[in-house]
Length: 224
Image (cartoon, rainbow, N blue to C red; front, side, top):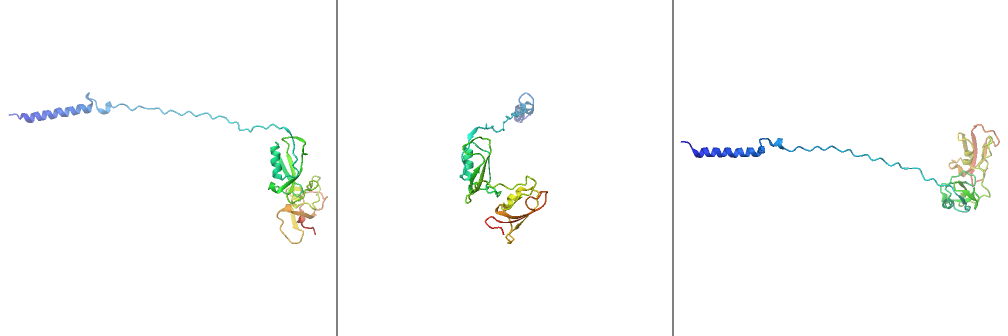
């Protein structure tokens, strides 16, 4: 005789398995992998490269004007330069009024003795103003001392001039030997602080590139 309880249990189990299978297949016999929604594809958008603006780097041109030139004589060199710029004159330079070819490194240590454009006269603001100056503790000369020059093709007289001025008067390739004329055999380091006592070749000799020998002492000393 058939065991109906066993047959019923088997049939029930088959029904449950079938239901699970339908759930997995989506109920229409297709697999879950086939029924999955496709992944959308996005095209990468290329960023637009902005066109750079063309900048005008040229400085604005300042139109020259005609203005009155102030009186700078007696002023400290730095103060004179500041006053000149305030008046509209920006082209500035300075020189040693004593003709020693010293550089005005610290402007506050110098005072103005002369100016190349007369005070209270009119000049274009693009005119270069040149100040003659001496150190604060020095006395301004009546007129700027002229630097020696070999422009005529002959050796100038260097006596009383600074070694620096003598060197500047000749071609930069000229060979110089500078000796301490005091006999102390000192090194001559700052040539603008030493004055010439003797020279070879002598003044008036034709300049043809020959070496130059100078004897010098410090400016506060006497030539021997």
